[in-house]
Image 1 (cartoon, helix red, strand yellow):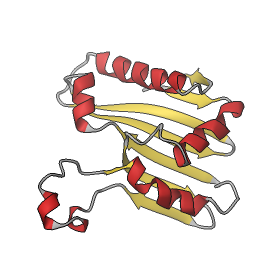
Image 2 (cartoon, one colour):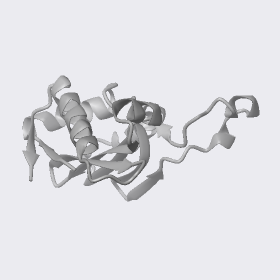
Image 3 (cartoon, one colour):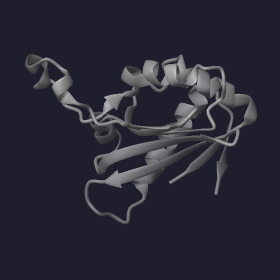
Amino acid sequence: MQVFEAASDSIKSVMNQLLKGTAFDGFLVRGAEISVLMKIEISGILDKNYFPEAERGAINRNYVRWAEIKPFVFSLIRSGRTPSALKIVFSLPDEDAIALHDNASALFLNLLFEGRRLRFTTAVSQRSFSLDRSLDAVWDSYIKDFLIKNRWSVSTLG
């Protein structure tokens, strides 16, 4: 697990990409909490019954993509006021996780905006128990590269 904190001058850029850009669109959403006028909790579980029956068999994921719910989340936040808190639990799609490391069951990126601070925390779930920490190292490196690619200034905590 690694914690990255965004520099204050990068927070606006991260939030702009999150809500209006495409940087996070490839991630799945496991869940989200948004505190605006009230606290709103979003389950990222995909309701396959929403789709026509003919399309359901082709859906091989259990969670919504960020791109699918981003407009909804944006509509909740765009009142002009900054949310008092925003937490999103992202994960890499299963096929991408396996391609990154053969023992990856799930790879998580937690985004937490609270008190004018923005943090990213990584976490992993293994397919089979192992004391080998290479999965953690690969995922932390992947996220660090993702943050650098988007030109967000972050510091590593702990």
